Image (cartoon, rainbow, N blue to C red; front, side, top):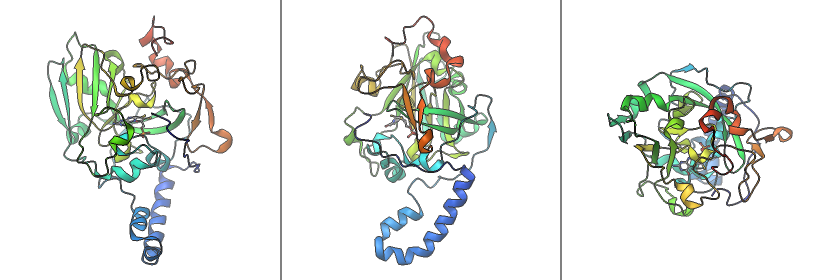
Length: 328
Ligand code: MTE
């Protein structure tokens, strides 16, 4: 992975979601007026893209949410535009801008999430059931990619533990494994470009999965997840590098063995199973001491990376007695 070519970050201004939506409607109005003329000049496809970026029919659907005491405070939110156009979703291409252009064909309805393995009540949940099963919370988290960039994202979801508890994990359950959706028939699916094993698979230790910060995520900025961010349901583990947060998941398997995970199989010396954010353990090919905050003003882009991405008070005790340099 992860870092195949120099970053293509756009530096955009920090804008609130409401301001962004207003501006986007204004831009769309202005663009539709210009569309007839513009189509002739720059090509109808390109104009259609500008007016209505291909995400999904559900993009923009509002969710009813409550505030969460687990939300990170004191950070400037990354704009909706940056969160939804600077993505890693290798099924849809390896460039950061590819998922927002290509993920429109991901079939997010109907969608089911199966919980299987070492649970007393294996179940298959429909996405509409998941959306109603527990109050949806607004959870702002820092999001730190192993590639040394970061964002601050207002996700929407609830603790994964709420779902797992419904399935009653057995006492021998030690790990959970997440499988992302994979179907070669999806339109604009560029999975071969990444050269990794599919489906995208990730995993957590059971106590990590049950930690309240681990979020079953179904939205951002108060709306359903756009496809490129892992619609309709993904995992977010804020104290770990972003690749641990599998997108568009269809199966959660509870097991007694440490799962083989996509990036760990690809290069165990580069992408450890734990992959807790840790500024003292460099990636073999780059430093992890600092990170670049996407969209921040030029003078404010470079940030010190925090141990456990700043969530150490909540999660450090999960790793008591473990050498985090060896078990990265
Ligand atoms: N999940 C799937 N299925 N496919 C992917 O390529 N990329 C991972 C993770 N989950 C990935 C995935 C990586 S490397 C990161 S950093 C985050 O998703 C990016 O999430 P974002 O695009 O919403 O910022």
